[in-house]
Amino acid sequence: MDIIEPLKSFVRVFETKSFSIPAREARTSQPTISRQIAALEARLGARLFARSTRALTPTEAGVEFYAQARRVLETLAEAEASVAKSNAGVVGILRLACPVAFGRLHVVPRLGRFMRRHPDVKLDLVLSDQFVDLVEDGIDLSIRVGEVKSPDLIAQRIGETRRVALAAPDYLAQRSTPQTPRDLAAHDCIVYTRLATGTRWHFGGPGGPYEVEVDGRFRANNSEAVREAILAGLGIGVVPVWLLADETERARLQTVLADYEPARLPINAVYPSRRFVPHKVRAMVEFLGAEFRLDPLLSSYRA
Image (tube, rainbow, N blue to C red):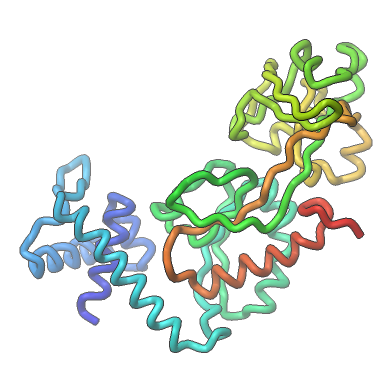
């Protein structure tokens, strides 16, 4: 076992380019991690990192050793899991990341049921509209709304979000109501800058699919801000139906382009590409998939 902990430390130092982050994760000190790496280098007879006051850079030997070290640790985890009872494997700390509004509205309210079902799991929730680096940030599982194109990640579809174009009545009274997606060129459109398609909005409707370039005076990288901007009458926005499901808020807005549905987006459970998926990750993916499947706001389900 004397080699396992240094291997784990080496992998996290390589991924984070830091001694302090792995030390914090392992609840130990930075000098301890540094000594583990030094002992590993002595054992291998090779320098794994080039150290300076400003940077920690893997050497060529370090890059080559990293791939082998990860494979060893994954094989070990797989071997341990193979002899554990299936339910006994649903243990440990699960670091879960998801967008701020989606997490607040549709993940956190469901987590009590998951935790009662799996009392040996502790949850560490990371809410951010940025796409976190799962490996570098030590994230076990991420929930993402939209397509996932990274070849280094496994994406499992667990839901679907319909979207709708909305505006405040006061805004429409001043600017008129668009009749087709092409009319949006004459309007202030509220742009969510983290949308994969950027300022190109996609609709389906009479005559086939539409793709329009939009612009406006207000942009935001946070869906909560987009919602508030629509409510404040700053323009027309396209948002998931679950973001404004509250009837009080919806009553303050007007649906536009009702005959032209914005393109739907998948809801994906995303985790690092590896042969072994921890039981705690698999359990959360299955749990959220089952929950979303019966929610009309998060799937094609109709009661």
